[in-house]
Length: 124
Image (cartoon, rainbow, N blue to C red):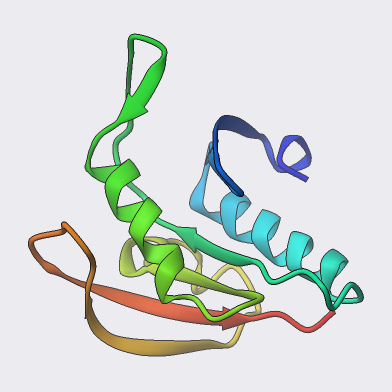
């Protein structure tokens, strides 16, 4: 799914992964397709967080505010949903037929500002 949507797997972290996409639209479409495909397998509980931000690559690792925020957003997702930042939502809201639930400004661990988030539910 990642390659199909012009993405790149950047890092595996325990049972999670970090991927980068050429556009917010491709990232959200990847997440929708992935959740739709696994919907029939009730044993999987997947949370996806998507943010649009700068990523710095150095010394074989990646970091930066974009990575930090993205790694925290998924925790606001319910099992088998996608949680996206306002930056992502503003880039895809007129391009995809999705229903979103706005979440109140959320305080993310180790992030110094409230973040506006949206929840996307996918039916298989």
